[in-house]
Structures are given as C-alpha cells and as structure tokens.
Amino acid sequence: MALALGIQKVVAPLRRRMLEELQRRNYTSETIRGYILSVQQFAEYFGKSPEDRGVEEIYRSQLYLVQEMHLPPTRSRCAC
Image 1 (cartoon, helix red, strand yellow):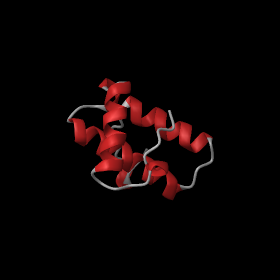
Image 2 (cartoon, helix red, strand yellow):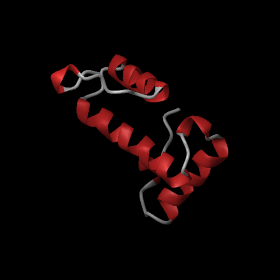
Image 3 (cartoon, one colour):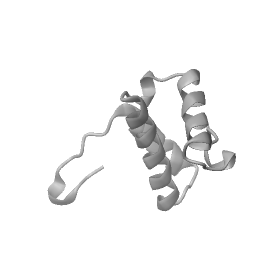
Image 4 (cartoon, one colour):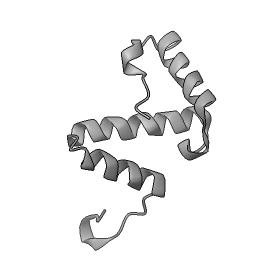
C-alpha cells in the first residue's frame, strides 16, 4: 500500500492477508472498510492482536455484541 509521496505504510501480515482475501473475493471498498473496522474493534475489545485470539474469544465477542450492544445476531456472525 503506497501513501502519497511514495511512503510505504507498514501493514501487519494478518491485515495484509485479510485485505488480499477480501479483494480477491471482489468485495467493495466500503465492505472491506467495514470488515477492517470490525477486526480492529475486536482487537481493541481484547487488547491483543486478533491473531492471538481463539474460538472462545470470538464467542465472547459475539455474545457481547448481541447482549450488550443489541446488534442482531446476523451482524455478529463470524465469516471465518
């Protein structure tokens, strides 16, 4: 990913793989931004990289979104 002035932005390997996969699936840039934001919020919720999280953390995060944030279950499904 190049920024203005030709400066390279450092992108974590997990994020790079995710971006590549979403682009490969031909998702719109808006959809990609939504996925990236969701993963960022997931990481912030646990205070660690998503790469270091497992099934239990995904379950807890989904439960939080449904019970505390009142999101419909369809909005908190994992596309893993």
